[in-house]
Image 1: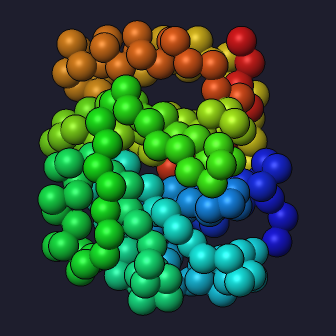
Image 2: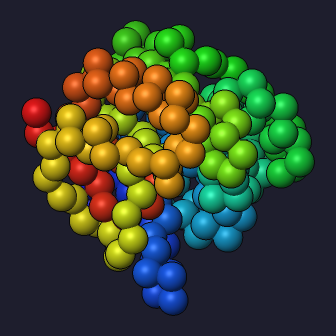
Length: 215
């Protein structure tokens, strides 16, 4: 299996009638983290590849940005294979995870907080994300060492984005976050201000085309 960037592996489902792509990502650090659990079907489909990439190393973390089935639906499938995994999520999301059948360990974080593990090989910082569907308090996650930002639904694009990377100016991307992505103007401006202070090298998007960031 080929990494989409260094030790970042992308797992994708393209839905032609919607012209829409759903992604999950394994960052094969030590410890390893999966960004988005996927649906039950997606989680089951990627398990063989996860085990091939990780070998005897466990999947320690799953990051869940917000409460939707493509982010959290497959947690119980992953927990069955990796019973010691820990979910990282915001407090509202963590509260709702038992509804998807998840009964394992959880760590809650807020924007501005961080998590470091593995003798600094995994160093995450978190950004508050007023996420779909009800503008609940979700999170984005940036891995500092690699410069990878998991952006969930924020920079969504339609099209077949499987394995595809485009180059875009970071500041322009932030500027063009519109009311379709974040309908509340005050929350949108606050998010844009926080993102402007970041300088990610790569956007691992939840849907569409990954972005190699310029600027």
